[in-house]
Length: 49
Image 1 (cartoon, rainbow, N blue to C red):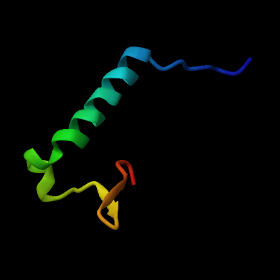
Image 2: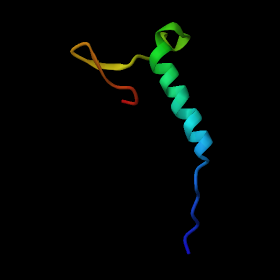
Image 3: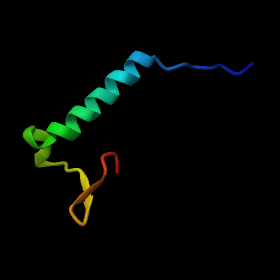
Image 4: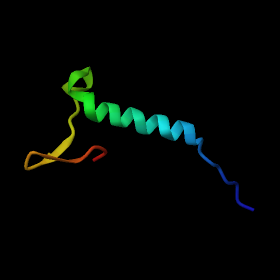
């Protein structure tokens, strides 16, 4: 029987909320100096690119 690891659903939800927050507010953080949402023709196309 393989060793199965089930991720904590709460941890996954928190990560999703953090990602959403950074996408919406990233330009207002120090991260915007080094990182940006990938765009093509002015439209955001990937937040994990």
